[in-house]
Length: 458
Image (cartoon, rainbow, N blue to C red):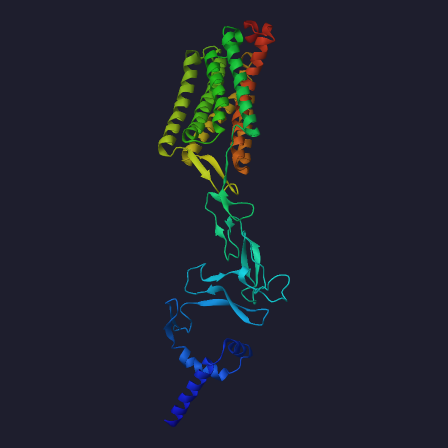
């Protein structure tokens, strides 16, 4: 009991001793660290403090021995007369919301005269500007870090961000990587040089095709036009003209209707062209064998067999296109992975099986036409159109065989340009190889455009 009484009196005397200190003496006590015994004995009373201040705020220590209201940041300034002045320049409240827990008014801080250049910094690294993120150095304090640029596709729009933020799929960082901007829209347009060049070439070849068609119509009763089956020649020329013009649908922003018409029109017109060439070749072979004595092919001669071949092949391709359109038609697709920082708008084929069936049938027609024309290339001069057909199909197959690796090795809008080039080059090969020599005879060598010259044998 005596010990407890003595201890109680000692604590009371220490408390009274603290209470009698004026602010200057308290500051000296804090600086020198004196009277540590006094603070130790006073701790028991401080942790149980619970009262209201002048702002009607409850002041007490929580279970972690922290003040529930946070702390004021005080700037101690010695005035010229030697008086110590206290100025609140900020606050720290760990219970406040993010961004409001630490508030500091740097302009209100008065530094000692020794800091003449810049205020002291309580960190070893400068702030990371927007577009960068902090990377903490190993085995160093948390305030020591390196600033590294945000990776591709990410930004930081504030200083000293620990992590960068990924942009939306249809957005991309700007040059400084501090904000996300919409990705560039890419497609083969009429305004750019490549699109304009392909458009001009398409119109040019279609005009040449129209001129040749006009020549054949005007000279339709001449021997060289009659000898080459006028009806099939008209069908071939019209289908080739549509082939040249359908390449224009590959230029411009892909839309649902243009995506459907691109490949179906291409498949149908080329099937008509190739079936017309096949009908021409078979007609030449049958005409040669029908001239032999006792041949039973004479009753098959005429336009019936030719038109049957064209209609049956075109109908089969038309059925394939219908199956394609009703199962999974082509549609516009926003490709965000092909080009970095851009959106490539292209036509997705939809059903790849149907797409390859359409292309496969065209390849089948081209192969049969080439083989048939190649086997009949040594017929007499009166039937020498097979030679031109053989060379035209050789050009056609060479273009599309070269097209496949080139198409697979290109990206973006250049894939569409390669496809347009293949359509125009193969169509121009058929047009030039089959019809240019006949136009030369009609226009330049009319003396050869006679029945005697056409029916002349070796």
